[in-house]
Length: 126
Picture 1 (cartoon, one colour):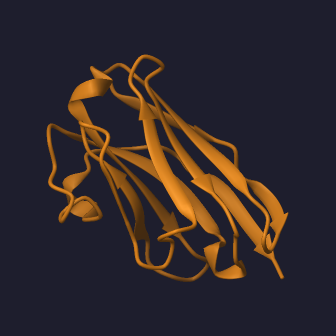
Picture 2 (cartoon, rainbow, N blue to C red; picture 1 turned 135 degrees about the vertical axis):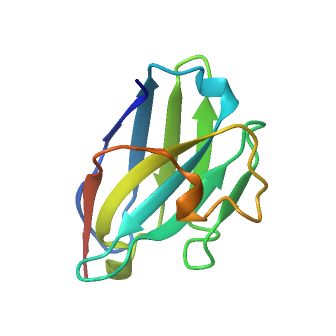
């Protein structure tokens, strides 16, 4: 059974940074494409960042230039580095895994992902 566990969330002031981690178990991690999603309070879940099996990433327009996603296959970990945080970045951040190669144009499509973590809360105050 594939399991994903996120950590690193917290409460910060606008302009500060946070690093999120997602540790994957029960899977050949290197063969999974990985995504970060977030659900703001009272809103639908949205794609934030995506990393394919080769380590190439793509990002939602709202976070480009501020967020960086990367993967460490040896540690079976997905990282999301978030800089210059804004109040609108507040939400429950979840990582997700999709088997195989996913093109970057489709990486933020929620329906592609079969396995999800429970999420870690990020709150940004102004």
